[in-house]
Image (cartoon, rainbow, N blue to C red; front, top):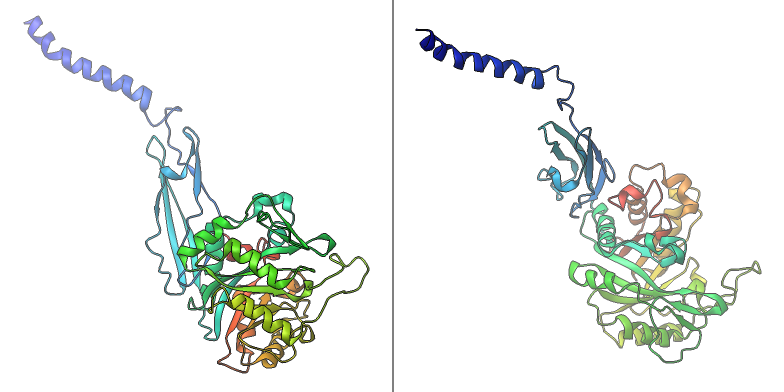
Length: 401
């Protein structure tokens, strides 16, 4: 009888023993139990501004857990399916991550899809230069990657409705000392007066990406005393096979410039004749009849007096008191060259005192310029300058992080 009762009671005693000690080790009062959720940190901007029709790029996220340590982006579940880049509005990207104990953390990023249709803006994008983007050749790590350039250029197009051609004014030759044009790629091995070269090519990867992503590029030089027709040959020999190239630009501020850094306190620049403008355009179009020549300055007296051809005229004036003053000056420029296409560079540091007050500076300034032009059929281009792409006010509209 005792053995029978013991055999009946033993399993019950073992169960009570297990429950007691399990409760001691894993009960709610166990100080070793992990009940704390990870803390999420979003990289990049929140909110993030996305131009109409541009593709959202995930900036990234991480989390820190009190037990598991750092949790990386590949451990997250990210849902961006709610974004509709064809319609303006605020959308949300949802993030969730769990630690090994199953504690989950969640957060969201706001994505503001923005843009207004400005029908006469046909080209939109950014000005590019090594020194303008990085401030120094010693800071080449700051030069945007090809994917970043594509995002920025398409965002600018998106701000004006997403119908303008995403474009770049891509400076491949910058004004250097001794009135030379310093080209940002290796020499072809020939002697070229007033030209110097770099030991490597800084642009091939970006242009190759643009070839397949719909970006259009005007390659530009700051010529110094180098012959323009020879510069066209040298640059096109280097980049003319790229499908993204649509033209060649000359910054007239640096045409036959004697004093590259203006140390004498005065300008030493040359004017262009109608004959020269026609010869330059003929040279550019010898590579493709579809190529366009553009000339850039803020004063009409530096431009050809009457020859227009197929030339685009760019104004890069800065230092205005407000957006109305800028728009009025640009409207006069457009009237002067109508019906020829015109383009404008905006976003200079000297104008920041007023453009930094706008919710969306590229959209507001560009729209004011375009809508102030009297000839509604005149093609317009709007380009944000690289000098302020990384400015705290402008950066959320161009970079993902």
